Image (tube, rainbow, N blue to C red; front, side, top):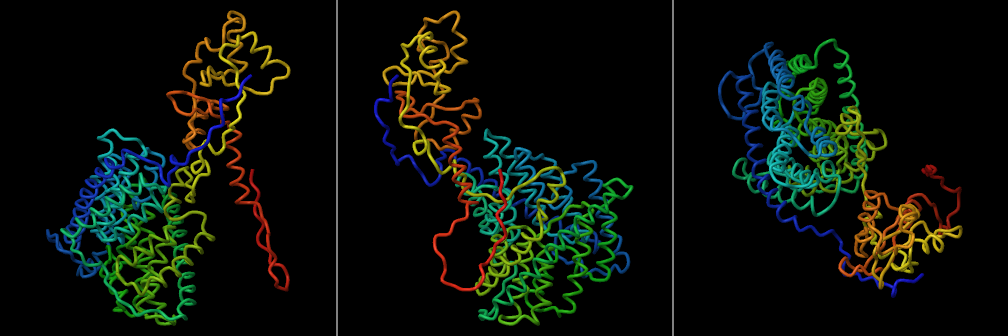
Length: 603
């Protein structure tokens, strides 16, 4: 028995804040091209919406931007959304069922459960069906469809080159975020949306290409849509009293978000009970949209002009309340029917409508601030993406005075929705298909620790010239202390032996040396500079209990050994950090002790 020649001294020059990736520049270059393609796709989608709006409501072939609220169809307006819904239902039935819905859940499902592969049909049919659905009065926005379309473009380009599934996911998300940037002119919010909803990680390998695509789309957008913010707004700075108002606005916005999400899936369940094929549902939903549009025409279509009027206090609160009610009803029914359309613009209008109603009673800030604050809070609570909503609202208006109220109200709304609802409007649809998505994520303890931090430095070894007979008698007898032993020659590892390996040769080659046994020439090893996550994966893939740690793969000099139990200790330490309650100081305060809800034990 011998020990490793000398104790390995860990070096720290291999430890990095982020993992290195030589393929990152190439993936970022692809993402830049995808950003351009998604920007053009956004232009095509908005042009289709304008075209179908003119065809359905005004009977003319034109790409001019006209609101369906200005139609003169009278009662005939009730049939227009139904006709659009019928067309979309048939397109989904005979084209691709993936075009149904608002796009973001479908993108998430493709990322997490479909290896980020999307079909060419989706890239073509999604913008076309959305243009028809919205152009015929559907109360949706263009952002969900363009996220789906941009994601499909990124996925299709990624499928034409040799990339990993993780890289294909990055390029899909790059296209989705770039499409959102092109529609709204909010590149930073689009990057945050990718982080909070689509990427499910925070790494340079994915974050940087997505950011590049959004930056390219932001600059390219100027050629199609100009550079001005979509809803330019400037309010006065809030007072200290506004904090209480922000809390109330956040609670009401959170309640609105939860109510909308719950109502949407109840309506979807009602449609599911109808004795009709699902392709007819959008037409039935369109009838409800048409009736709502007859009584309140401004609830039809995308409604960017109405959002602008609400933000600029150009609509009386009584009218805003009517728009809020009608828009909520027709949006929930239309989306629950399975037609094609987005959720961001309707949520913006509904939140702004709530803020316009509250703006006359909430003290501490400019009344014009509350439509913006409630708009962001409703969006953040509904999507479960508060940072996206805050930056998104700022990007739409460039109103820096509203940043603090936006932060306060949106986080209150997000907290309310997190406590009240199990899942968001984005993940509920996926859950109903049998998949669960856990959206919290942190730094994996196995990722942030390296092998040289957890390995055993003092290693008992067997010399390679030891015979099988001697090894059985000495190391695998009644006093056996290890399941497996490293076999070394002059300090270099040549293999690992356990009882199973030796028994293969016990009868025919008992006098053969361990170093001459087949399978002992290229053992699986670990390096000190590898992360514990890499080693854990290697142990799982090869079904091993422990790995010898070598200085490098050229000399194979043994410096330690790492086992599953070493890796489990890291998870145990993480568990204690999360669940072990400790008190180091006692506050010199009287009164009864404050009790917190008990921590639920797991494992």
